[in-house]
Image (spheres, rainbow, N blue to C red):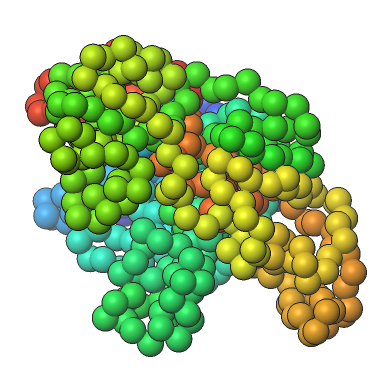
Length: 470
């Protein structure tokens, strides 16, 4: 190692060249701008370090470069590069943008399975990390190792930095799954609260061989979902025969909206026809199992040969429905009124369905509503889980934080999120409101799109690349 010559502060300042001063000035301005944007004064502590890094150089930041051992230099160079990359990816992914892949058909035909999205966190303002110690690009689990990708301590309070705007009606939004706070690891396709409702708490907790370990996930470590904001804070929403009414006014239909239909035909529907209708292989269901046949016997008459005709269960847009209706082998088409399951809230017997739902009021920050045991199921999860209050019901009285409560004032804004593929979307109709602190960002454009029903280069949907996500 070379021996460093002792120099005074004035000498070091005087020997700094223009390039050093430019680097120091640019990084200092970045620190100051970051402090103003975030309000975090501790960022200013980096300025003296930057001054030494670029100008005075008291600390030998690059001492490893002077080693005579090539192995030491190589290891140090790789370590330096990897650490820099991890830190850069962490900050970019946290404050500016992230990638997101569409895993399900809930937003077809707006977004397709296999679309890779560029999601802007600046659109609504990036959240300050609530779980700051985490591995970049891993949401909650490290691949291969299958362990948590984050350390639960420390946990910071929710705070959002300034962005370009707020969530607007009909925006497509990426958000953390609200009821994903608790997860049964072997049944992650079903949210924990539905598992408890249908199976009982004891069955879920005492049968790890069926349900797996029960784990808690912080807000920013919950699964990412993507849906469309169809209701904003303070709105009243109702769904009548599939149509959304917002504040008493019927909303215009989203282009590409889909519903599921029973399609009765005299012959098979070919793959070519399905491709023309843009119905993926996963969505093509020929109802020919014994269970399906028992259901269909109550819906359809036997044909002249004494058997049921072919019946498909598929999602269709209005355009695809019109095309299919003209086919000569199509006998009947009926929109699904059978499937769907129980809707939010699970503990309220209100007779709502996915096509006839509400009316429901979407909570707004600072607004106050009357609370009683009858309407408590609508807001119970907000009060207890999202806004972290102690909630108890004793007889016909509600107690919040050990105080008798007849009303409640909301601390956050909430949103109503739904998929465009209305009968194939697990959305707010089934698990309720999305709190503002769960909002991640806004998809801007599709940077890659792969059709899983095709192979190799034919799987690339070239026409969708760099297409707007809205």
